[in-house]
Image (tube, rainbow, N blue to C red; front, side, top):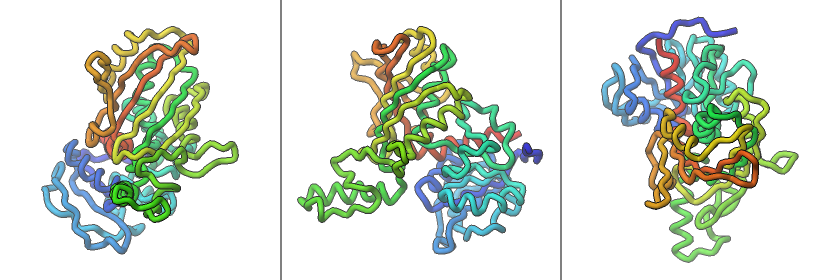
Amino acid sequence: MTWTKIMPARPVVAVAGATGAVGAEFLRVLHDLDFPASEVRALASARSAGKKLPFDGCGDVPAGDLTVQEMTPKSFEGVDIALFSCGASVSKQLREAVVRAGAVMIDNSSAFRMDADVPLVVPEVNPGDIAWHSGVIANPNCSTIQMVVALKPLYDLARITRVVVSTYQAASGAGAPAMAELYDQTREFLDGKADDELTVEAFQHRIAFNCIPHIDKFLDDRSTKEEWKMVVETKKIMGDERIRVAATCVRVPVLRCHGEAVNVEFADEVSVEAARAALAAAPGVTLLDDPAENAYPMPGLLAGTNDTYVGRIRRDDTVDHGLALWVVADQIRKGAALNAVQIAQLLLP
């Protein structure tokens, strides 16, 4: 079943999980894009109800504080678009209530990404897939989003047959408490605390001055679920089950912005020059690739930006038709909130 409701030009928007890191970013992005909302509702758990959240305004909504409301199934009555970042279990619990209320859920969790009736959308890659949604559209995994934004213009030059990617993922991917832990733990480490005295809660090991090759749970084949997500989500978004993806996902001591080293194999020859030209012209991509000037994307300098940055483009001579590149994007912006609001823009008449 596809959605038949006509979206109003000035929709009512609910931000579910408004007090979290991504929820706060939803509010910033709605303002930055001047999304044409007639109303914005901030929803969260009962313990956050009554809290005031600063909002710079968008559409018909003036700047000022938003009062957080407790999120219940009745919260979505009169809502047109519900931006969700509450975790998979909450999204599953509230899906029926959201859809029954006539709203479209744009969900940032992993709850529905691989469901056959749920589009998994990156607007620069597969915007047409929103046409067959049935009330829910899934926001992909952060590491997948930035990779496919970079892959799409290359795929348009020649079919991609294989991708090998190693990620360098920021603490922000694990939420606001993880970012706080990186700050606190770094301070503790520099103050001379021993490893067994450090506060370790958000990660499996200390993240300060360390890299952890473990994101999400381990699966039976000894890969992690984060790596599995990159494999299956890439195929679904790109619309090509033949693409082979090998991923190794690593958490690094960076606050925001994921980096990815990506090796791409094509069915036919793609020159470095053609790749650079395609990426430079692609929507949502900034080419930052000038080795002579030491110009390449770096996570520490790109926090708060919207684009996917690509550099270090070079031949990979270990395969017949290969390129290597380096990709960076802000995990909270393009990897989460921005991509979701861009999906919401696609729904507008």
